[in-house]
Image 1: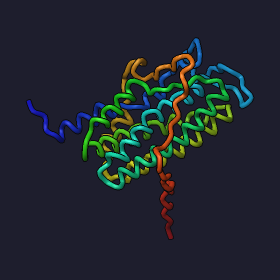
Image 2: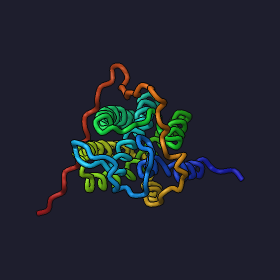
Image 3: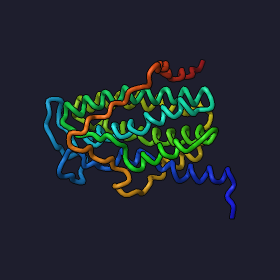
Amino acid sequence: MRISRNAAGTLFVTGALTLTLTALVYPSMLGVQTVSSAPSRVIANTSSGPLTEADRDFVVKVRAAGLWEFPSGELALKKGTTPAVRTAGAHLVNGHANLDEADRKVAAALGITIPNQPSPQQQGFVQTLTADQGKKFDEDLANILRVTHGQIFPVIANIRATTQNTLVRQLADQANDTVLDHITVMEQTGLVNFDNVLFQETTPPKLPKSDTTPPAPAPGEPTVILSPPAGFTPPPSTAPSPVPTTG
């Protein structure tokens, strides 16, 4: 039986949008020898406060998110067919370059090993966007990124509310601002299918850890730096909409 173009698009949204932020809630195993099942377990006492498994995993996964969302933004700058999609790409590039710089500093200060490649699942998202052309690219970018950023919001909030480590807390603050900015620009493309987004955000994917865990870097491997392309101009920040008043 033939599948219509619209049906195929729906299948993609339903399937591929199971997404990135699974990676943000699975334990990493990077930087430690033994991982327990208790995210609140303190694995190190540092000058910036106790470091828990959840703190460490958050630092690792912020890094992994940037390693696929940054190149996705570069693709949007090149392949986006509308100004709004290209603007969204610029926000991805700028936001993750800045967030990744902060994340690398926090990781170094806390002795956390961070990856140089995203997880296999995240690599698959980039491969999908690389293969896409025209409007299909625009739609997939807007919907994949809107779901992933929508899913990470509660993860960031939980880290921000529970961490006792001041460096992790500062990173969570910056991650929150970055995610809100990226949610906003994805919605401003006018391509987000909110029904499918809501379904994906409330239906956690069931994937093996091997798909959602970024590979550890090889010994002595240089740290990958996310550097915007030559001539890149940072976009203005998105400002929150004013709160309506009554009276």
